[in-house]
Image 1 (cartoon, rainbow, N blue to C red):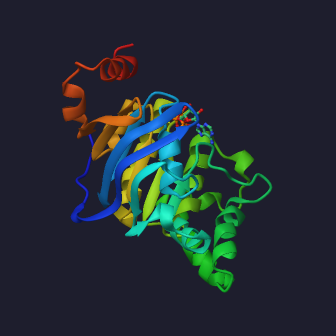
Image 2: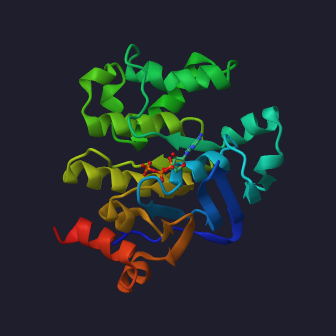
Amino acid sequence: MKKFTPEIDWDDVVISIRGLFKSFGSNHVLRGVDLDLYKGENIVVLGRSGTGKSVLIKIIAGLLKPDAGTVNVLGQEVPALGTAELRELRLKLGFCFQNGALYDSMTVGENLAFPLKRNNPKMTADQRRRLIDIVLDAVGLSQTINQMPAELSGGQRKRIGIARTLILRPEIMLYDEPTAGLDPITCTEINDLINEVQKRFKTSSIIITHDLTCARATGDKIAVMKEGKFIRKGDFETVFSDNSDELIREFYDYNFTQ
Ligand SMILES: Nc1ncnc2c1ncn2[C@@H]1O[C@H](COP(=O)(O)OP(=O)(O)OP(=O)(O)O)[C@@H](O)[C@H]1O
């Protein structure tokens, strides 16, 4: 179970989605998605491959336009935003991709400086260094500042990827399969880090995963997507205590009874 109780502000919705539909030709991917993410909350999105989890994230980030529905992110109706407004909004969203997306030819420190130089060109080297120290400390890898990504383990690369996302101080974190390809001990460390980020940086998060151990450890709420909509939402116990749905049963059995 989750090891700490986050401070969720139930009066402050940071993402609110209603009646979202998206098709690609005859492929009806999203068919009436509703979702609320509250300030300080971690929501885990579960669903089989190809159910539309990435499409949902892309619509939240304004990278894809929905066919119908409303998508409000940090008080703004995303499909109505222009290019400049979208760019502003995306700075408040932190994307954590599966492979950490680090530049192999740069040291860890240079990788962390990169988004700062791009987004805050007036920042001094000292100011950058202070922020780099803060995020490296947050992910427990201060000693790696001069190392190359190739010298890091898979788990360390993930942590640096998270640090690089955090350095721009996003309000919402979007984690795409954060524990994929990691051994169970490293998975536990990443789960703990996701919770630590939530606590320390007061972020709200959407975590896409197939890993129920990750879902149980990090999710304040689990949302299960099937056939283009959420069929269940609630805390882990509530969602998995009723195994009448085949998908719920298969997810549970695959993760815990093999
Ligand atoms: N730009 C696009 N054009 C056409 N079809 C697309 C596009 N993007 C996604 N799709 C289709 O939408 C469906 C959902 O894809 P999506 O990537 O969201 O799945 P997912 O749930 O994230 O899967 P996974 O768990 O494997 O990452 C798939 O059938 C995919 O082929």
